[in-house]
Image (cartoon, rainbow, N blue to C red):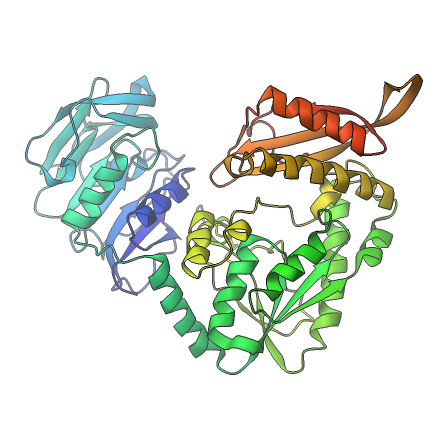
Length: 510
């Protein structure tokens, strides 16, 4: 693929955001660790150096060889990248005398510079560094300053190399997307040809070439990623795709039947396997969250392996792995891991399953997966589904798992989720669910004292799950839901609402 952008990752928490902003410009980009430079750079039209928690002044500072990049391809250094270009090319980087974190405003912008076209004086930018560039390299031209940072942006004469000490990828930098567009489109001349339709066309063609007439097995979860992966494969190989949807007994109420019916309408070749009893028997007496996860993963592999043997001559296992899974599995600091992490839909690929892996979504972010699905005219209700944990309700039942606890939580969850839909709140929430707490709560129903379960409701807003804020649901909604749960679900007499954000809390309780 031509017109790619290469992002060299130095370990910044914002590196994925750079890629997402670039993808929003309809430009394809890839993230690679700084110490794993591709040998062939011919397909890249521009390179970006990310930020880093490291200091360029440290003895072990990340120090890649840019011989085949600098002066030969348009290059942009962001934060650490800017300091790296200065420090190792004749400039001076030192510890900042003032804190350079958070919002700042551009107090000087050099006129008639393509890099800052359509960026106004006073534009807000986001700083996040403890070092600062005290002296620019020889031949550098200062392009912008803030009140505290004299060398906020610069370029090197005689080459298309630019550097900024702020982060254009975060939303706090109000003209950050414009700056990235100026660099990539106006300066580097990268074509804006990365669209959902083009992805579908190119991916289907690649899958046809790669798989041919072989048979592929895919473990469907009912979620967005595996469903979109299934549709791409279906377009490429039709009935040679064999989908398996396993009911682990920990799905939402009626989800097994509902999802199977939904898949039938999509023309997919799907086999539903009800293994509820097998999973619940294996989980009996287990209360440790990690032990529950491992048990579910092990049983899933056993069930999946049993079913896969029914597909004669299957050669491929398809997974709904997406780009954050790929990125997070590769160390940006030189670690040994370069393999894809286990995917929650299939629990990883054990050695005894002699299948090759195919991952049609491995270069997409979550929001891009939804846009690709929409371009294939998939059901908006399916594409808009909230994320759901791979272990299902097992990690929303704190403590041991019993069929009765599963029943209670399924009923509570159904009331909550259906109420969000009835009140037109579902699409305003990124993820919602209920948690069954391991406490008996005293209550009064009629004239009798009761000791029944307490449940917590959780609803968060997020873009990718890495950070999340609790959703300020209307009080009258929460009042109605609480009453409905207590009145309709036998075994529950108290409802609470979780108002914790991530961080410090996580989205799930286990």
